[in-house]
Amino acid sequence: MAKRKLTPRQGDGPPPGGWTLEEAMRKLAGEDRVEAYLAALGKLREARTAPKEKSLIFDRLTLEPIDVGERRRHQAIEEAQRTAVTRRHEMMGAFRTAIRSGSYVTEGRPGNVNADVTPIAADQWDSLDDLDLDRSAVAESRGGGGGFFSVRVRLAEATPAAKGGRPPSIDWNAALDAFLLAHVKEAEFETKTKLVEAFAAAIELSSGRAPDQSTVRKWLSTNLPRLYDRAEAPKSRG
Image 1 (cartoon, rainbow, N blue to C red):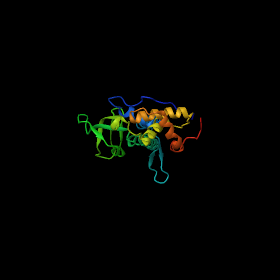
Image 2 (image 1 turned 120 degrees about the horizontal axis):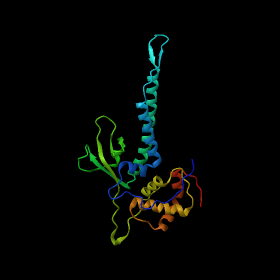
Image 3 (image 1 turned 180 degrees about the horizontal axis):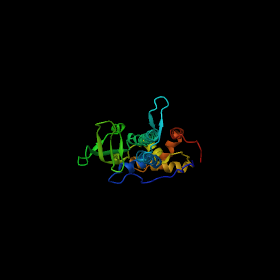
């Protein structure tokens, strides 16, 4: 697979009304993961609706008829279901990482579409895995589990400036997570200049405030190895 170029994405945060669940998944978990999940769901639907193919053989010992066609159909459904579950876990894992970073808040209408909007705590997402991206709804997959409709994802409120107008300190871990989720696939960091620009864009996305690039350079000068380690990217240098 070709390396994806590292490019800054200034102003790529949610709109005032927030992202829908599918929009948030595409932004925070990645287009590739969402498309892989949707493709797996499509294959599962195809397997479930495939026409029944009657193909009988007889057991050598009992002489009972065995419907081989129906057996193959069940096997195809089970395989497609396993793939869909795997792709969903991959997508939800990346999404949960973004939500736990503290950069975003989630909300929805609990139980039904007419309920009042309430926050969805980050740890609640650990059990919310029954998704309906078309309706921006999510629920617990276990029987009787709770759920939310009209789910929206917004940027977390920025920390107010300290006395004297001094800007708040940067949450580097949140910025790092935002940077990796937004920019790193099979990453190749091209030049240090592009790296600084992209990281500054990630900080602005995660905190709502554009940082001074000299601050970013200073942090990267001592933390670049950790960045490469977390991104699992080759240590190319510009």
